[in-house]
Image (tube, rainbow, N blue to C red; front, top):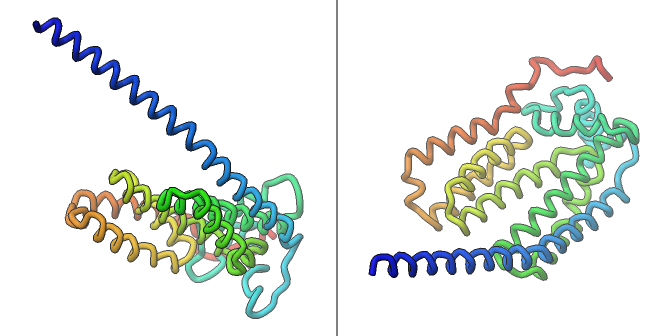
Length: 254
């Protein structure tokens, strides 16, 4: 009887594993069209930003182009572009200055377009994760991408398109946590929120929203001190770019 029972359990386990494998394969096949549509939307918006991108050095004009020329210089020389320094923007954008095409000012402008394209992609992914509707996700991503606020910042040297990318990264991680309830997503969101603050202080509003989301979704998580300690450490790790700021602005390497 034991051998029969054991054999039956083995058959049942094999059948369960086979069914699980089929479900995984089926889910992957259904996910490809969703990802493909998201990629097409992102590439379309990125092409638009590149088509309308500022071609070279930007002029100084209040209030629309107050910081752009200064930011182009500071990204090239790894300087401090303001009171908070925006070190994450400076370091990431500096990498674009090594591209083998265009002048340095164009490459800095190009970084803004890439950041904005990434933000559009995350809006699409977040919208689909919430509503499971490709049409709604496409509409949301296009509305966000075509919006004059993002579009105007995606074609010049500014910190706001990276700010949008960081904020959407944090929001996406929070949405994934609310769906899967895995602490890893919550800790990832903490790291991203900390990193966001090294670019622009307004991204701190996401922290308040995160507390509200966690409180409404699973309130007991707010009382888990070990998880809170890990989250605090992850947020501090996100602040690491701040430690790279030099004590004085650099202008001599222009």
